[in-house]
Amino acid sequence: MALLAAACSSAPDSPRTGGSGGAGGAGASGSGGAGAGGAGGAGGTGGASSAATGGGAGGEAEYACASLGDPCTTCLALRCQERYCACQRSAECAALANCLLGCDPGEEPCQQTCMTAHREGISGVSLEGGCAAERCAVQCPSRAALSRCDSCRYARCAAEMNACAADPSCRALVACTDTCAAGDAACRELCAMLYESGAPAAAEVLACGGAQCGADCEGG
Image (cartoon, rainbow, N blue to C red; front, side, top):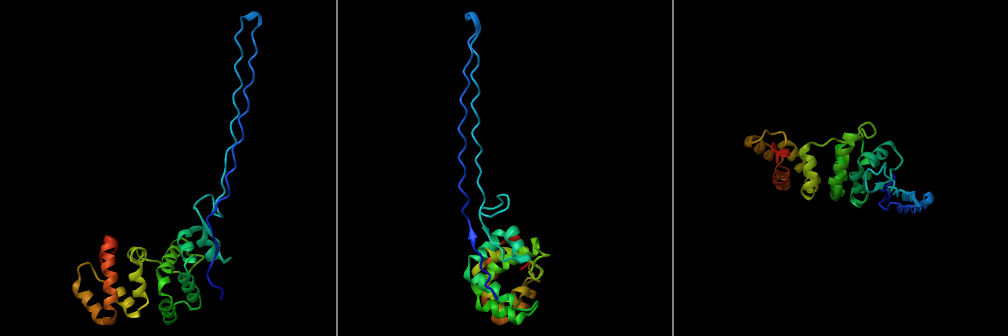
């Protein structure tokens, strides 16, 4: 199966130089010295310059990454350009995305194996998937939506989230904790007891999320 890697372009075409202004027309002298000299002709307007974007639609973005030709990546290249290009530029993100393509929908053991093998690509794939679920749901039906909290965590606590998602116990613990109401210490303690081995990595995620994501993660 082909690796999810696409060429990215950020170099726009060179802008064209505007045309030279036309020379003003000479004024005609009046008869018998009484007439005023005619007004000089107006200078011609310079040609408008234009710059082509590097493959983007209507200059929506500064760069574009080519799709792989399928409906999903075609939509991602247009509507989730920032996340899609960032993933394609990362070897681990592209490798993880490729690995996940080999898993059946809902095949958790396969997905976990991929994430453990390519942990540095987890945040990139997750953020790309979150955008796909929001903007390309029809073309990318297998992509999972992200909560506001997880969107923030993957963006601002990438290292902590990568380490946690690579550990099944940590993933389960954080998911459990996220169901607890704000300030429900008993609920969080129960989650920690159920998934004890994931507690150290989960604590890093929760601490970073609390510091970086504010109200988006106030329940977790």
